[in-house]
Image 1 (cartoon, rainbow, N blue to C red):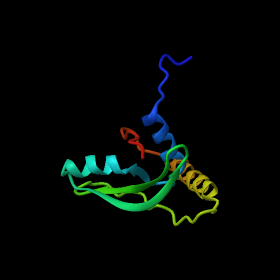
Image 2: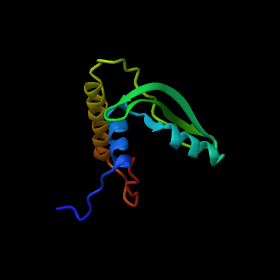
Image 3: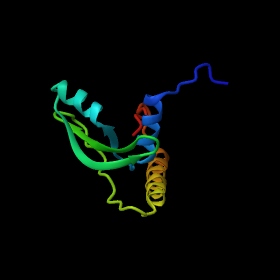
Image 4: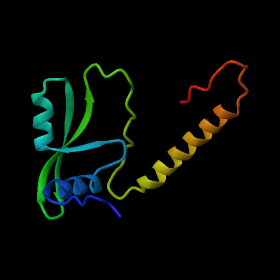
Amino acid sequence: MPRYCLFGDTVNTASRMESTGLPYRIHVNRSTVQTLLSLDEGYTVDIRGQTELKGKGKEETYWLVGKAGFPRPLPTPLNIKPGDPWQDLINQEIKVAFAKARQGMARPRSSGQAFAGP
C-alpha cells in the first residue's frame, strides 16, 4: 500500500502528457519550455502543436529534443504516424537490444577483465 497519494492538476497534466506522447520523445508543456529556456543552459525544443489533453482541452505542447554540449547521442525517434503500431516497433527494438546484450555476456573474457556492462 503506498504511503503517499499524489493528485491534482500537476499529476493529471503529467499523466495526460505521457499518454499523448511518443516513444523516445520528451513531451513538455509551455510552462516547462519557459522554465528551461529561462535557465539559459542550451535546451532545444520543437513545437509539437496543439494536443488534446483530456480534461484540459487543447494545449500547445512541445518536444524537448536536446541540450547544447550534451556528450552522448540521443536515440533517434521513430518515424511514427497516427495509427501506426508503434508498440510493436518498440518491442522489436527491445528484443534486439536484449539479444545483443546476451551475446556480449556469452563472449569469453580473459582472467582479470571485469565486465563493464553496456
